[in-house]
Length: 442
Ligand code: SIN
Ligand code: CO
Image 1: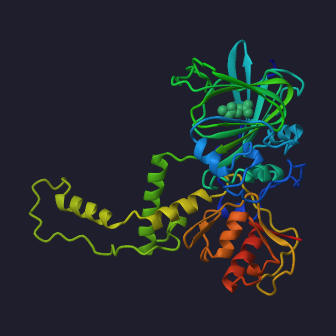
Image 2: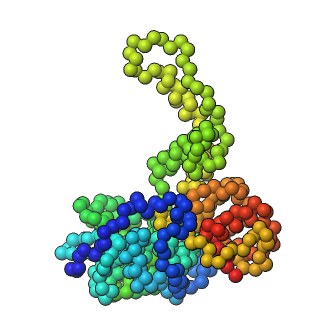
Image 3: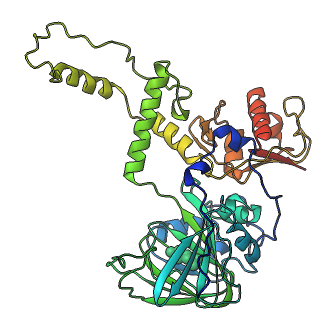
């Protein structure tokens, strides 16, 4: 393959982290939303854990989670019969031109693996061979992709990460590798031959721009057709090669923080809580403050001997520092605050659209029909009485109604429970409608 370089100058990554206000108010230019033919209809909003699911080859989610999740691969023929690409290949190619979309192009040149990050000024011709274009987090941009991802909510939302879509020319692939996360590989168009192996030696070829196993030992081989799906737990070696052109593969990926991220976040949350309780202002983890120890006592050192080595740190100050830190409890309430806020932080490129038409004033009168639906970009979690939405702790408790909204991602306005929504709940829903986090549809 010749045409190089494909990539445009890359937008500065840091700039993506726009301030909260601009992200919420839709300050960025956006293309008009387009809706594509989604896959066949979801079997239900949240799959019942004990009922067989076609998506899992007739296993119930409970059976799948017990037998396969994080344990062993599973091939599911016709997981989604009649699956159509949630986003056409041409649109994925357009997305790869945008600097707010993460994409990568992978190909081989003179036997060497090459990888270039987007955005791309130009791409290999659709009919040419030997390339793969990967577009990340497509669920953030297209409802049909988001709807498809919702089918995997038999895994907790806290673990779901994103929906990546690859398109490839004949013989295209990203090479033999392993991933650190679980993945469902769903064939959406064309055919891809997967070879997988459970080798222990996961050493990589050095000096390459992408992860390629030095010594791939395939044990099984499957040819996936549209609608077929392969589940792989972390660390399973795999290599998928397109057979023929027009290959599209959807990867449903998961997030699994390492202990360092969890510990660091927890300590950040503890620090924000201490600052908030001391009236020093706080980030999201400290707002509002949780009950905690009184740390207002000031350091005292009566009896401090005259210093012979004035530059040396006094032992008593070290002891007092450790004692102060030990008073801060790292408990479940703090863990819930940290995880709730952190895991609901919107995607770094998420821009919520202001409502196109004024939303109904739920405080003044509840609509007799229609539904309230969470925007595809909204992240919502709860734990006990605490409710988290888009990086914040909600100012209302996680009532049964709001838990239902979080679990189902929609509320039927005609349901009696909705009509009984409290003024505080209505106030929140109105705010979320205004933010574009929630939409009312007839
Ligand atoms: C692909 O879609 O080509 C690669 C996905 C993967 O191997 O994880
Ligand atoms: Co992979």
